[in-house]
Length: 61
Image 1 (cartoon, rainbow, N blue to C red):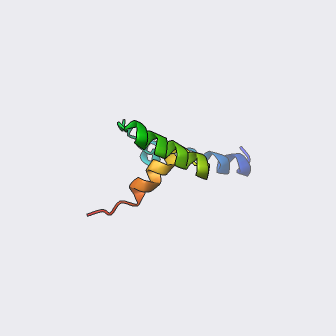
Image 2: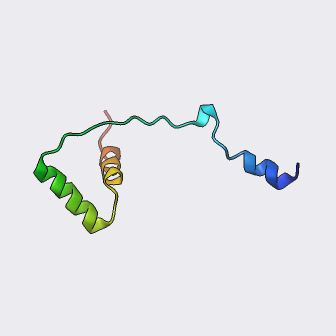
């Protein structure tokens, strides 16, 4: 095997590096959903990205 191919395989995720994802459901009022959709339309961001950014900004106690 050549050196390039061997280096390429090292970037594959391993079980110890696998990121766990948890899916949640959030109930929004029609007004809240409209506000979120309007913001995403104005900024060009996906709803999931906006929510993830907000969660990352929460203080950890």
